[in-house]
Length: 304
Image 1 (spheres, rainbow, N blue to C red):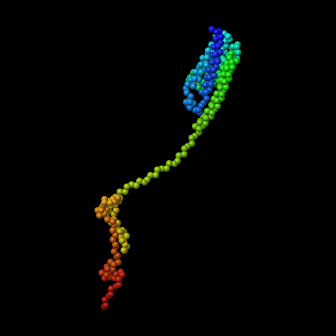
Image 2: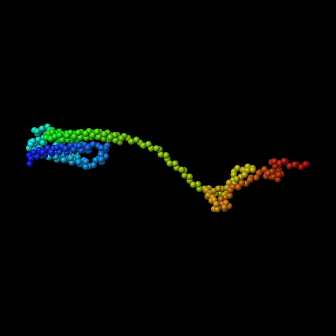
Image 3: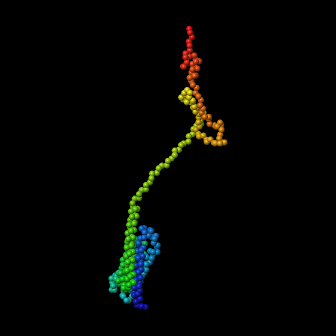
């Protein structure tokens, strides 16, 4: 077996671990950027497998970091003990760059452990630990460029610079979107806190009820004619008022079905009778009694 196989394992696993950590950070920034003003709408727009992919990338990063450490300890080209890879500034070979790698390892373990125990930890604690992913990415990138044997490789440097630009752009995008979302939520909260205007209700007019006329029930018509209390004047005509019925007359059919007027049960129409003049009667009564009438001459007296 090639004696440098562990060195190749350490180099390859370190580059793969850095690439996986970078991909997990980029994916986390994409998931954290709000695409809507509400969290419910943002969750509906993102399927569940996107978050699972972010977690799997971070988990693979931890696995390849462990392989990187085992390769460093097993390699004989550069002597690394467990103390040098666990304690910062304990290594004799590039202690500063190696110390950044040790810090990155602890940050990666803390972030992954809190992510697995997210349901048992306070939400605020998990959030602050998870925000240290920016520090993890920065320290891991510096460790790979400064301490790695592939620092002079052009492709590795190009990939490192591209990752830096990508993470910076996504971070700025996240900050801008978060401020817009905060302003939108503040506006919505102000609208909800403001008293709602009272609706203008037009006055309701009471319904107009038609008067209810009770039915009129009259007694049986009387057959006794009405007599005027004022004596009639000479030469006037007296109208004899006949009783009328209180009920309405039925409609008179037209045609052959019309009833005979003589057979109608209603009384005949009122008749008019002339009033005699009282003056001739008074003159006749005066003559018959032998006295002077009211309008005639006195009778002649006998001669003595």
